[in-house]
Image (cartoon, rainbow, N blue to C red):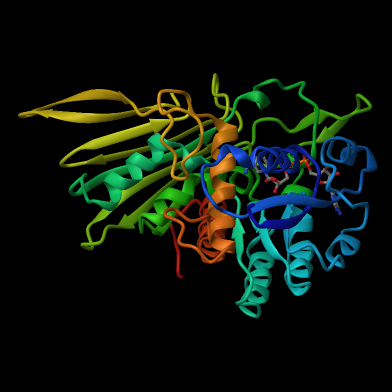
Length: 379
Ligand SMILES: NC(=O)c1ccc[n+]([C@@H]2O[C@H](COP(=O)([O-])OP(=O)(O)OC[C@H]3O[C@@H](n4cnc5c(N)ncnc54)[C@H](O)[C@@H]3O)[C@@H](O)[C@H]2O)c1
């Protein structure tokens, strides 16, 4: 019988449900990893907890004050998926309460909040604290990362990483907290989508030394639930151009694209690496395929190989089948539990140090945009 790790979920919205669902199909994984058991849930809205209490018999507390959940001594770990303005207080109190934590991005509404979370983590080396980021766990992306680790690209010419949505193209879409800076943060779309574009580049050692940012706001107001118009004051789209030094000190450009208004894109996450020896690109719009250049002497041809279902953590699904978003979530959770259990994770979750780099980059991007200049980044 697998060891059980009792989890509490704070924030029972879209992402809270994804974690609970992943925990419910832990048997999908062919590993001896401990299994998460949802033991408690918390949301300020009692209605949001109904789906959880209906489906998870192990839930012993469903509370509206997160402090009550943190006081439960049998809860070892917490997943926190709340609006960005609440992350600092709840993450810090979860850590102070001695809970392992997987917190959602951007891991603090701004750099000052992230600094304070980071300091608290430093006072608790016994805890495993990580930030959520699931897209790198697509098998085709893992194959691409392996090629990066092996130095297969030769000298890097440029890297492009992006996360694109189109649902905000509907200007009548109702406002929610993600479109309001007081809840979502000044970063806007960069706070929502940024970590996703940075996980693989940072893990590859591609840390930007500077950034030039173009941030756009297209929609100034949206209807609220009552049909009145409410301010929509976050950036919709962001394009960041960064200089990155490779391991030999050569500089190459890295383009990070984060857009809520990208025509035709439905949760489109991509990574393209162009090198002198070879190039490769992965896009969740074609989730099982990896495209790469095959060299024909002086010319290059793009080839496409279907990777199939070959994730980092083996599962019961046959290799010929397709991999998708919920599989990536399950894989990310397997990586987190693996680290929590003191095991080596081949591709670990986004670390607190990486969230620090992310905030340095996004803060510099705001400065760059406002002053229309290239902003240096000091680590
Ligand atoms: N990893 C991903 O792919 C991904 C995708 C979407 C969102 N996110 C992140 O997840 C987090 C939550 O986003 P979401 O889409 O689940 O939002 P959501 O609005 O669907 O859910 C947030 C929940 O938090 C609850 N909440 C608000 N204040 C609370 C409090 N004080 N205590 C407890 N609960 C409270 C709300 O009632 C709501 O149910 C954000 O940080 C977001 O950036 C990550």
